[in-house]
Length: 551
Picture 1 (cartoon, one colour):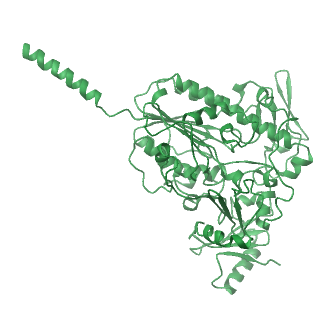
Picture 2 (picture 1 turned 135 degrees about the vertical axis):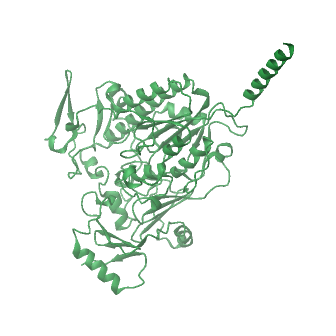
Picture 3 (picture 1 turned 180 degrees about the vertical axis):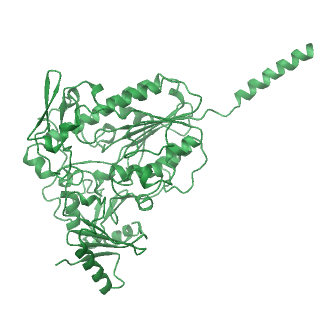
């Protein structure tokens, strides 16, 4: 009996020791995606009036990346790059024709990899652009409802306005009173203004409510919870109290210059002035809506921040509080009149720079980590996939284009890549290299900016003789894109010649939003294709980037 009791005691001691030295539980990940949020965030200083205390609080707890850029400045290709871990020039998704299961059926997405390796993956809101792969999530929040009927924003119903009745209230659309510039679109979304509706009528609030409920549930697996905000994507509607934070009579407009486009090439002016993703600056000015638009953008940013605060408060009160990484990012920036542009899809800093913050869990302290620091190294949203893989302690995922950013948490000034790439269409790339930014257009035109002296990118140095050597160096950083043999400008047309001899791709930059290059129009313009093919036959050995004179 004595021996039996002794062995029992020894067994208990060994069990305790084994538990003491067991591997720590894998961390959870709260993955916060925000649509179209530029650097108008308090801790980024992008706008002097913006109020985002909860995002600022995350920056104070974690590491803020001040030179983070998107892989592509449009929702679809940006998210395709993030979720696949492949650069735009490799995954081939250049536009919002970006349904992941259809475009990248054989590429394992980040949440699929986490789920395959033991994570319970949950999603809510906008994470992918369009549908997500079937194997990506154990559960996904319902899509939510808009705070207005869909027919309210149909161009065909706004004659000149559509009246929506909510109880005893009558709400008219468009809220800003502006007719649509993109008349070819079914929906008129280039709109802004307050809605006298409760928070729970907005789909972002509905999404956060679902996510908060999930944080109250116990699990026997580590959790990956992705939450994707639709705002501040247009239309810029928020509950009235957030608009009241920014009275239009006192709102500050972004700095601008009347001659800002004078030193740009023809293609550069196209990207500034064609209403590819929003409306025109000329219309905003004509209808006296610039201050209203800025006020509404700030309001939607503050509304999103408020909802993030609710989410973080719920996390802090949950069993996940001490063992959860928080990763916050926006898919790209957004212009509000800078370069006379509204929306995204450009190579300028306003469109490529994004907020990006990582907060480590309290249960995994590092002696070298100091909260509230800023990393000024150029990084890319492509780095998210390998970073998430390393922070969860999973086997390295090979074949990714990004690089884990975890070493920068303990050493933000660590030697790192000196530049990063943003791709905005075939043959168009922005190189962000700290002080210097270089934009290469498909037709050979270029822009160079010295952000140390010109942070607003008002002075294009591409044609300055003293910058020749700098331009030569920056050109070497532009992706080669070997899958394309030629990029051609032919009048208002852009032609892309595949290297494998397949059909020429053709896009009419003078029509609608074809600047985005969703679908080739070669079949519509056989005479243009024939003229280009004839020129190429007559000029063997032509450069990759060509301007062919059009009749």
